[in-house]
Length: 163
View: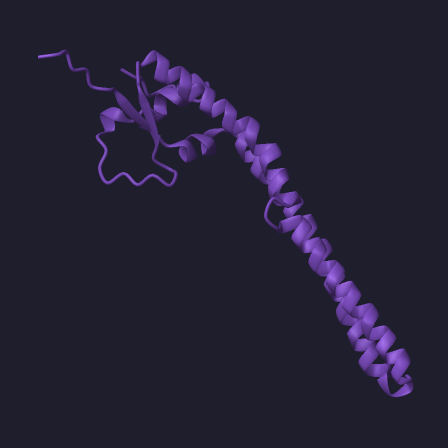
């Protein structure tokens, strides 16, 4: 009978690890701040458009059809510009997405590097992330290497010793 070797595996909870990292919390706060700034800018532009509609309605009886149509065209153009801007900021791979990636990628890479070091030290062939899309019905805590990764990042609990 040929020699059969099982593969050693483990799992980590990257979301738990990230939440323990001060630089992740700082990145999240920066993302929140930038997002709120863009949201406020969009709300301000929306209020401007609403004010233009309101002014048009108020002055409508004083305007010729051509003047009314000209203002309406201007307002519609501003609405389209705002929609385009919203898409540019919050759309798929928009500025918000790129800012998130810029701020979070270095933190995530730090975690992945630590996971790789732990996997090599522990001789793991496979490491799952239980915080992602992967659904794990049951896991034996023996296979949880989250604490090892936290220790590798210098974020381990001093009171908790890894055996």
